[in-house]
Image 1: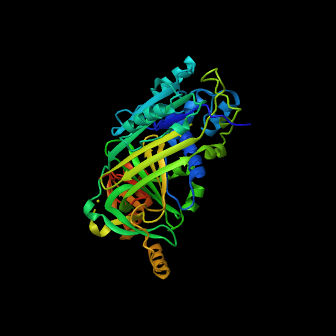
Image 2 (image 1 turned 45 degrees about the vertical axis):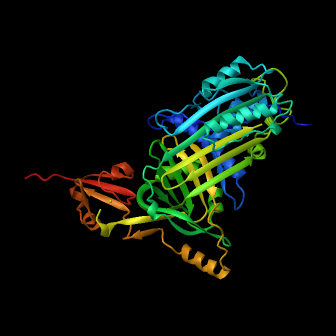
Image 3 (image 1 turned 30 degrees about the horizontal axis):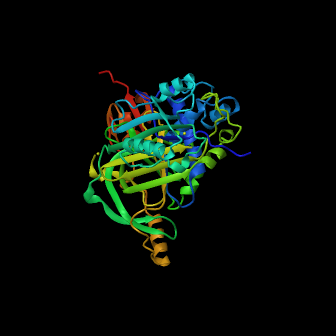
Length: 480
């Protein structure tokens, strides 16, 4: 059966609405999005290639299609998007999308529905998409593909500060094109703590056992949310104006990214975030520029969305006219990251501190392939994610194999911390910090109460440092 392309959906990215503390409902929504994010990541990445995607953008595009899907096609969407009921995302198990609030300055979002002038869209579909996406409906004459593509691309370029100038072309339109859904995002924010440009220096990036690049690395000493285990390190670097952060998951092995990727999922990310504590960090990371483009149809089919692309698709919730199905899914992203700020855009087209002698620092040296995220600190929702494995600037130094092997051996032997022995536990007795020796000397019979805490904010009330936990002891009061 020949598959007809009859719906075109183009979009850039939308943001989950969040406010206040992380509640059960927001967590449920972000878990659904993050599960989809890792599915998409696995089906999209290619060996030894950079990748940058916006799972939220793709998720929103598919949700717009899901709102008009019926019967078996709707059930497919529910599984792929991890929706637990047949309701719309405004219900507890869905994901609510809208314009960002005061928590997200620097992030601009706009949405539009471009409908062919001959298509009669159901009022129920129009209302659902408008209510959830704040989308404007626009009538278009798709028999003039050049003009239609120019109008849509101009809208996208304006909304993304011209970082993405083209999402559709006249060739994407056919006599069967009926609908294009677009939403656009432009994000530009400074770091909460900027890098000092004077500390930026060229150094080696170990792309593989054969490829060594010289690129500019930014450096700073900073206290950051930090986690490590035997396989990888993790840091989260916040932005100044929003509740978003840039996170890096860095393998301890120079070329261990694929081993880490096999274990990556939403549950692992939650365990990491639950275990992070503040640590003094010697942070080294490359200045980055990335552009990515993907055709996601096959990736989505492998994830379980199959009938939507075939003649068996049921989108009767959009219109009762000619049967609708999805066509090619094209995803584009753009990123620039330097000492001061991060600037990103994404598009999808579905053709929808103490005494110096005690100081110790974690060494976080992102000079080899790593995974990165831009996520919401409150909901943990993943807005963007990618892998950085091969610099686009700096050039392959093409050093002799013997010299490269020696560099790799030397780099692999470097420690993951510097300074004095790291302090694992903080001991507090009657509101005063004591040494481990003083703690051991305490007579247990004289102890009134003992409290153990791993809460990083509570620990920081007493001391700044690399403490994985704290023991708080209150002694019995002696009567004179």
